[in-house]
Image (cartoon, rainbow, N blue to C red):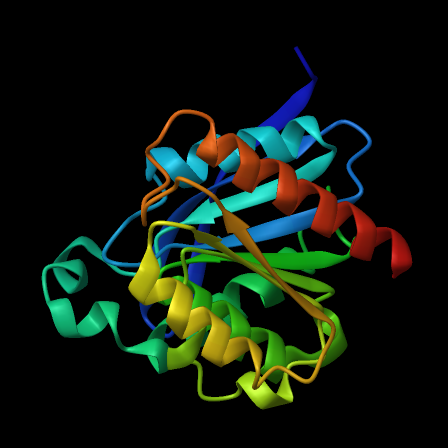
Length: 214
């Protein structure tokens, strides 16, 4: 078992307070802020699994709700990329002043529509974000994808054919360092045995590489 510090936090955005959990392993090298999509919350088992594996790789993680329970019942909010982006930007700003991780490089991990928010937030924040990973994401929905300076890793299931095509098209619009990794045999949610572990390994390697470069 690794030694970690866990704390409940609240991300403030306007008059909204969004609950989250910050996990900081001993001797961590950077912080990864998660952006959920498709109405998921900080309790998403898939992102929680990836976060735990990142913790074991020496990275702090922040899992937080981008939407309130009431907001998440309205499907349109899931696709309100600007709203999700604004809240992700607020979360990054707050993490920059969190005592246990202050001064460490920050990366973003986005899933589904959260990936579009992660890309747009990285574009808006410039060198405040050192790396971005998208899992089964919708980077095609990002408004500022051409402006991203942070390295971007797109991870898509090989059997998630529609989203894979969207990612291939989106990758052509990214001018920053980027890679597209296809996990063979995986569908959109990476529910197949071993596929989510591959996602976590790819993400851990990507963040470790670019955090060290910073």
